[in-house]
Image (cartoon, rainbow, N blue to C red; front, side, top):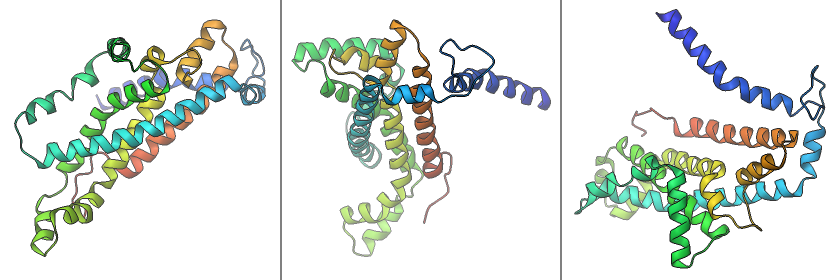
Length: 259
């Protein structure tokens, strides 16, 4: 059974990663039609460098992802502090309401946001995309930071206050440093969610402003070129870097007390 389990795991990993590896390899193939034998070339990365449309869309995605990470992490951390350290009426309801935004299909969420933004006069554009991405990222931040709160002993703050520290000083000098890995992990998670988001960006983007996932989709509709492989490889490596940094600092599953 152990050998069968290992074989099954290998098959699943091969099934998941083979298309990605093929896509990355074809980004270095000189042929625009993916002809074999393989001929190594960087022509598509050179073409990508001269493709101002894709580069501008990529820069838009990065800017939106950074703003989303900062705003969502700040608001989500504040909400997590309130939910973890306070008792008030409706607390359980608010905790439950964090899950639907994650479970609801993004197609429905994007449609609802588009209608709501038109109804309120917010409209479409970069500001609307940022609002939509922040709304999607906050529940993830609250869950990640809230998990970090549960690994921190509450009596550490009480010990600091018993030595003369104020509640605010105890939080910033004792709890916040212990919570730093979770906050960093939540910020990186929000960044990755925003960077890869397509549906919300597609509904809220304007003809003069778009993000990289939307631009890739539009380019594929007009005609697929290996430049898409090149930019997809860059995006994939960027996402993998974010995940590795998250794994390095957040250390998921580590519940040991940090003193």
